[in-house]
Length: 125
Image (cartoon, rainbow, N blue to C red; front, top):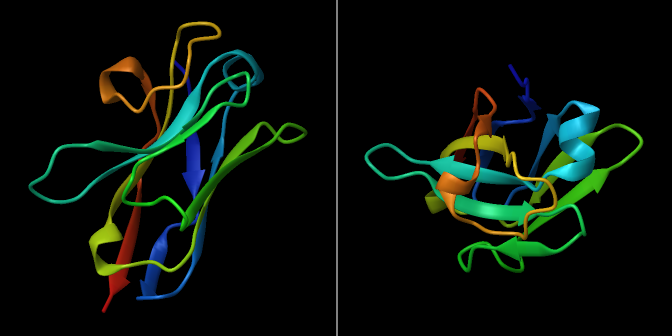
């Protein structure tokens, strides 16, 4: 069992900011791509931002210029800084990890096999 522990969700007004954190075991953090996904009620889970072990980053078009994914190697922690939040960003956000060593970055949901419990982000307009 792989445990990904998320934190940092909450409620904010449109235009505000939140930062999500995800702590991962060292062997996951150092070798596998990790990312953030989200799912709003009645919709499919979608990729938001991912970073692979080489540091390659991909963003969904809807968040480019507003969200930033980053890593703190000393803490084995993945972050998602979300700025200029919009109502349509409201969703449950999940941290996820691949299980293929050194796999290239992808936003495809089915490439990720380890999932956190999710954290709610609510943006009011």
